[in-house]
Image (cartoon, rainbow, N blue to C red; front, side, top):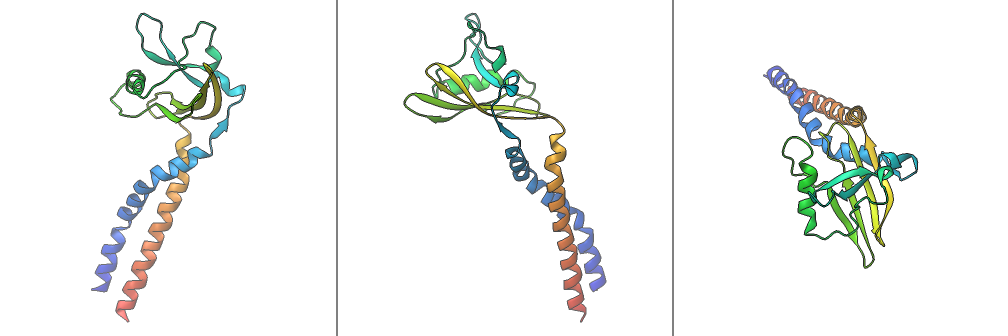
Length: 183
């Protein structure tokens, strides 16, 4: 009888592995992303995302890079909570599929500044996100997060290791418990 219990339990090992894998992907992904956040430099300015309002004819919000700013660029330097829905809807409309993600967020608001984060909408095969301060009608870049499709290998490696360790512990526990029953 113990032999059959052990076989059934061992056949459940893939379920344990994939359950642990699914549970740990989001937190490990966020943890790995933190390692890719860097301070803003002149080198990152060509990709650093900035929110602008399109010209007077359509009044939509869109993203350009910090290096593309010209003297007449309509940079968004005043943001209210009421604007967030319109901004995020406009940004969401630039990619296929309906995603309820918030690409533009107010992080902190002081008496003379607003700290915001802005993520460039993608199909999630890459990430480009910037954090900047709006103060005195100027943009002050702070941090940037960028990675491409290869980032999945970075994030999946520790996740697979965690799932393998949990599966090995499960197998060890099954063998140990079924041996105790035998004795």
